[in-house]
Length: 252
Image (cartoon, rainbow, N blue to C red; front, side, top):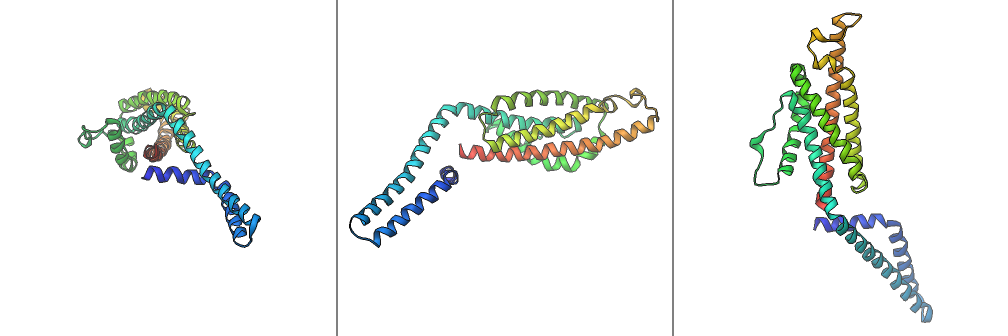
């Protein structure tokens, strides 16, 4: 029922100007027919019926076109949804895992779809990760940061494949959320790469600084705040993507 209501409401919005004009013309002709007699009255009744018929024709034609498109692209839709859910799951999992936020396997219902269950659990964890991320990042070791480097590589690869592959298939509002997430990730990726040596190396192996090691520490601490902000932004954008995917799954 929800699917049908959403479909026809979108159609009304799509053709709202045309529907308003046709409805007004139909009403005007009905009024004319009631206030006139003879040929003019009959003509007005016929015109009113024609305008109403055009409204139904528009809806029927659009329904046929939409059904045909859905049938042709059904497999592509299903694959793109699954891949986008996987992307969102990877984004949350790969960014939290190096900082000690382990995936809560006990919350997974193995009788259900793993991708959907992972999505549910990951969404539930986003607020917790954002709340405690700073303290976890401060406690992260060199090996943790190296793990993040590897995870960033996988996320970069996934984004570079998914966006070009499905950008012509998914709805504009969903594409906007994917592109926004990709933009936030690129900002984080560049920001981390810029000063990665201060995270993936022990202090004794940090690049030489004219102002001494204390300046390296200051730069690292400032960059840590930037990275925390970047990751929080990515997690918030991922949650928006999850929400948009829910809407898409509900109507198709």
